[in-house]
Structures are given as structure tokens and as C-alpha cells.
Length: 254
Image 1 (cartoon, rainbow, N blue to C red):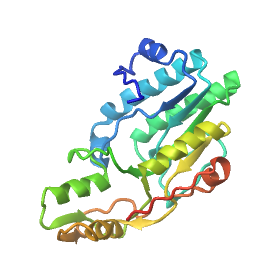
Image 2 (image 1 turned 180 degrees about the vertical axis):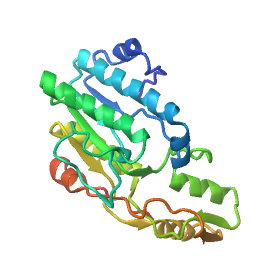
Image 3 (image 1 turned 90 degrees about the vertical axis):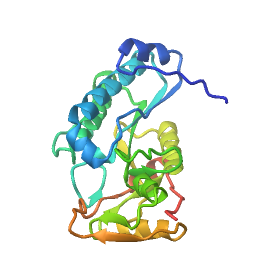
């Protein structure tokens, strides 16, 4: 009730300039979210609007001299690896992102880097969240991420629930309230012209995720090992976030 809601077209620079006037603090969280399959087939639908959002929001904030801004990047900006650890420099093309959609997030990071180099701006922070889930999530079966997708299929009484792969793939699932607190901490402390990871710092296999759901929801499930499991392991190192911004995710998966 204390919030003013404005529906705005972030692909318009003029609109972004108007809505960010006289703003002290700005959180840029807008993006195009979708499943791995959708992001691989609808490249333009992910890539082009995200580039426009980033360019317009960041430039409007610069022109309006917004005191502090947090740009929300993504785990997708990383190259494939078992453990994701921040590099010292944002302004590098040394390794490509794990998927095409990750380029648009990387471009936003480079825009922040360009402002730092040219204008000496240190007031734009960057965070890279991992696999975020929680209240307000997207349950659309066409493009939902893994946690809401499984919950929706359970709700639809799929019997048995067939999960692709053997369940051994490891992911870093982080509760959205923990990420929200991390973003606020990044605004407060800053990220020193580079970025910090916002994950849980805990390994969770897909099997553990399904079993956690099964611990309080009644459903039958089976794994189909003939289907792809995805990348074997993706875990975020959150040491820098703990040390730089006092980030301490506290919500367990259960």
C-alpha cells in the first residue's frame, strides 16, 4: 500500500528518464525470464528487449544522477563451470557466457564498467543471482524454472511426476527473500565497480529437490535417465558477498 505502481515501457529511453527523475536509489531487476528450452529457441525475444532495458535504465539513471543503483545480472553471465567465482574485472570478454541470453546480461555489466572508466562512477553495483525461487514465482509450464515447474506439475496431479535425468545434477537454489536482502546490501555497501554472487552457497541435487517437495506433498515420481540432465554441477561461491556486503542467506531449501 505504500508503493506507487507505474506501468512503463523500458524500451523507451524517454520513459526511463521520466520515471527515474528525483530518485535516490534504483534497483534494476527487469529482464526476460524463461526455461532453458525457451531461451535457446527464442533468442531475439530474450536478447533484444534485455539490451534495451539495460541501456535505457542505466543511461537514464546516469543522466538523472541517481545516487545509487543495483544492476541485477544473472548466473547466465558466467561461462560454464562447476563453481562460479567472481573475477577481478568486469570489462573482459575472456570467456563467453554459458548461453546466448547471458550475453545481454554481460552487456549490462560492461555498460556499468564503461561508466566507471569514463565518468569515474562508483555508485552502480552489480549482483549475479543463481537459481532464484520463492513467493511470486512464475508457474507457467511453458517457461517456468525448475522449482515452480515441478510444483505446478505436482499441483496438476501428474502421476507419476517424470523428472528428466538421473537426479544427480547439482544446482544452487536460493530463496528470493535472501536475494532481495542481498540486493539491498549491495546497494548499501556497493560492489567496488565489479559484481558479487548471490546464491545459497549450498549444493542441492535435483533428486534432493524432488525429495524435499515429496517430504510434505504427496506424489509419485520417477527419474528418466534416458533424458538429458543438463550441466552436471553449477554452484556459486558466495565468499566475496559475505565479506564485501555482509550477505548471509539463511533460508533452507526445506
